[in-house]
Length: 250
Image 1 (cartoon, rainbow, N blue to C red):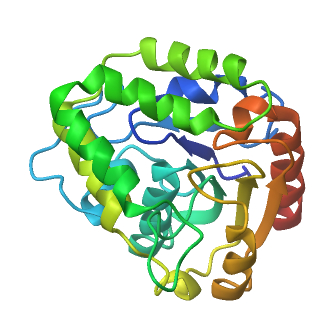
Image 2 (cartoon, rainbow, N blue to C red):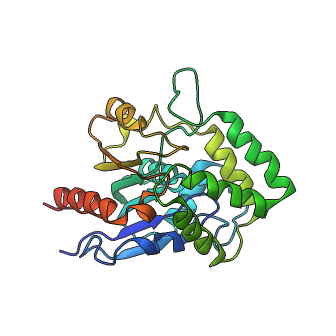
C-alpha cells in the first residue's frame, strides 16, 4: 500500500522554496507535495478569500486526496483548519513553529504581543518590501547562526514572485485574530508539534500548553533553534519527523 504523501505548507510572506533545506531522505516512501498559500509565491489570490476556512479550502484544492500535512507558522494554522474541515483528507499533522493562537491574551501569555503584529500591519501599507524584511529578521532572532538563516530566508523570498498585498494583509489579520484553542481537542489526527528553543514569535514554553490542550499530541523543542528550525537544524527536525512517521506507519 502506498504511503500517504507529505504536503508542505510555508508561512506568511514566504513560498515553497523555504523547504529546500530539508534532506531529500526525509519521509522516504512518502511523496512530497508543495502547497502555496493563497496569493503567495505567484499563486493566484482568489476572490473573497478572507477567512481561515477560505484559506484552508484554497490549500485543500491543491492537495492530494489524502495526505500528511506539514505546516510552518501560518501554514500550520491553515493545516489545523484543513484537518477540521476535511478530516478524512488529513491523515496526520506535523506543525513547526505553530500555535493555535499567535497573539497574547489574558489567559495566553505564551505568544506575541498583539502590538507586534499591529505594527507590521500598519507598516505593510507603507512599504511591503521593508516590512517583509523586518519580519524575516524577527524569525531568526536569537537562533544559532542567525545571519546564515536570514540569508536562506531572503533567498527563498527572492526566488518567487512577490506575494499579493491583499494576501499579506489578510494573512496578518489571521495571525492577529484566529484562535483554535477551543477546537484543538476535537482534532483527532496524530500530530507532532515542533518548537524552536529560541523562537521569539512562538515561544517554546507553548509545548507544555499543547500537552494540556491536546493530550494526544506529541511535542518537542529543538535546542538552539529559532522560528524556522527546519532551516537551522534540519537534521534534528528530520530525526523527529522520521520517528513520528515510523510510529504512525506501523
